[in-house]
Image (spheres, rainbow over the protein chains, first blue to last red):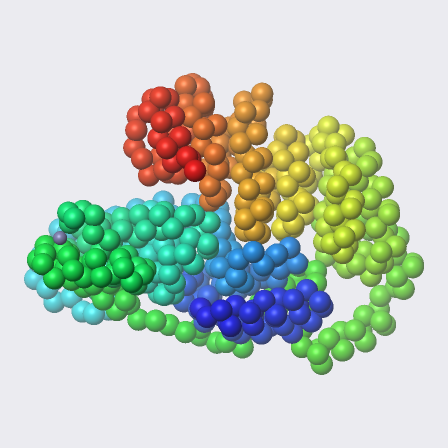
Length: 187
Length: 303
Ligand SMILES: [Zn+2]
């Protein structure tokens, strides 16, 4: 994100705090596609992603009064999505259930004949990618998704996740190592 | 320079500045192993990026839903025409601000947080603040927290800051009050003392933890204050609060001084959880050995 972009956001935030409600709508329109894509990578389900991103904007709306501009609006917003997503996982305990499904699926694939694997279609490959990414530890997955699909640099990711540059570097590296190991038959 | 020292991934990710880039490139030119490693990571990224991007199914519906969600929380953001319409209707159906019975609305909100009461109190404007402020010093914990929560939501920043500076919540007043949703969506850092006090109220832990978790989004300063509270709570004399603090430390995604966790390692009830949080926070995998962890933590936290 360019500095000019961040300044436009800061102005919109100021306008919103000054009572101009339409400024928030401008922020929603500006970031909704990025937000949706990001949430889609976190949830791997279009409907959940839409709900999560909408809910994130609603939370942002409510919290924006307390936002003091110490990070960019975008970093702050992404942090909300990440926290909401973690809340959701905790609340529904879906993660364990899902993990079980994915593990089951992985076992099934591993036992399947290799001929089936070699004829794998592109869409199946992207399913595999999504499954493997989903199985990463939360911090590794978040770093990877922010890097890969949002194109953010280490410093920006560190700001969003509230961690250090070295944490980002380490987690991204761990995620790559693990994915290379888990996906070696597709690489 | 050995291959282990090469900052290959930072190079690939465009994180290196000029002198460092050149160092990596020089090494790559003469090292087949590192070149192969770089190619392998590039290939992985290519595969990972091949997952098709998708756009929102319906952008207008998306905006509408955010709009509706924001409205249900109290404040409304809408287009100008709609605002004028709603304003006109509100004039017809809402009582004049000076006729709002602040105490009655507060009682209704304290019994069960509801947006109707909140909206009427909002209409009452600054006239409601002194009443809310007085209620924050009352003996009923439920009303105290409801009043505080409403004041955060409704008052301007200066008023909220002033009132909060002089407020100490008294959770002992009427323990077990139903605070579940009161202020649940407040994300003002000044809610921190409220949440910390609520932790000590049986039955309010979930709410308090939720507020603490939300507060960490606000700013670095907020993170620092939340972290400070967690560390204090880890040393609390009541093991139930210590356990909660440990849960929070586990759930919160912020950096905080880890030494307080090391002290818990030999606790029979809390040692295992403390170990888990330490491992998650540091990425290290030592056994439950206080000295080893103390060294690791000190090293990590050295300036
Ligand atoms: Zn090398």
